[in-house]
Image 1: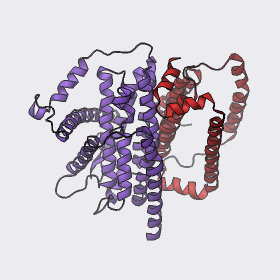
Image 2: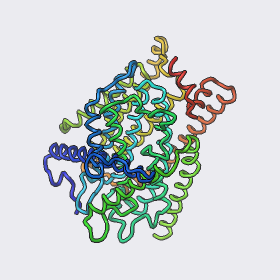
Image 3: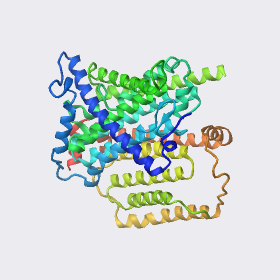
Image 4: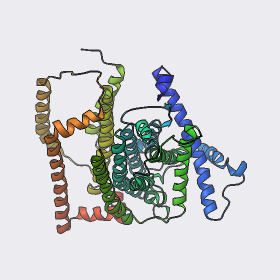
Length: 326
Length: 188
């Protein structure tokens, strides 16, 4: 039986505090690890070593970087839109914390379990765009504004195939509860029945997290750093933290929908779950350091003229097959 | 009437506060963010009333979709930072707003809200069945409305293109990521 945190901790407020603390801790450690991993992977792909000095294999390099970020002076530019500029780093982090709580990491445990879990994941993901816009507009910087506009145009475009691909899976599993979807993948993961859906989902997910080759919103050769150009110190760190945690969230969705979540032989559930999640993240890093950045019109054309029709066709075929088989 | 849990009042405060912000702020972008806050509060109320599905949809469609689309439309179509609306216009707005408020208020007061089941879980399958079997005419009519909106938007956009309106030139430049046009617009 699936247990949630509220089953284990009867007091609601205590449960909320515990969940928030656990998620924050996970998000921070995860970002530390992923930044290090990204630097190592990129270095290896370019025949370099990456960080080697601080700690074994340079593992504590990001920890030292965080200390630097924490102690940095916060610089606010003149003529910013004050409420939006200051709210944006906080708002960008809220949906990330909420989204992380929804996944069953084992047969018997999820922080939160709801019958609309999958809808909630996408709902929270949508809230993140508002924060990006707040940052872009609030900074009073043309590069930030352009980055934010690109981010939103891109996210609206790629959210459609993302949700359509996930919809095909919910039709097969007949549920939007993430635990049910994982359980419905009996002896084989859904990537075998939905290979096209899985591919569409993964491509769109990479685009949703604004990562290369879809990192148009922060294309450093054109836009300095996009929507977070004017943020420094911890404010910048919060955007960074949100980006890396978003990678985890989309990978968790992909793991739960297409790779059978916590299922796997021999090893315990959480090991399989996080193993699959970090494998998908590794593939994202791999993609980033392998492919060049797309041009903006190529990016939009790819979403509207390739991914969306393909996702719709996939949905239609899935529905037809399900109807015929039932 | 049953006592209302304090957490519901928190959502009411968020919804009303957001709504107040959205009508009182002069900067149109701030107003949209206020609206997003109000819609978030409404989603919380749905959650309180035991419909997590509607709450999730509210956040997905309104907070994450409509608000973002509105911000985006404002950025593309509206001269940024321009203040609009004189006193006469505001006075004229009283008529439709008052009329709408009157009609909705009257309908709300006349309608009876019978509580069918308080604890019944809002099963997704039930929502789907209701939507596609019992209310399928309404459902289809709504999609026709959306289709009309899309067609209308295309017609308006294409007419501007022919006359070579300034606004569309900016729009095109901005959507192509042309730095100069937008930056100048922003600076002025």
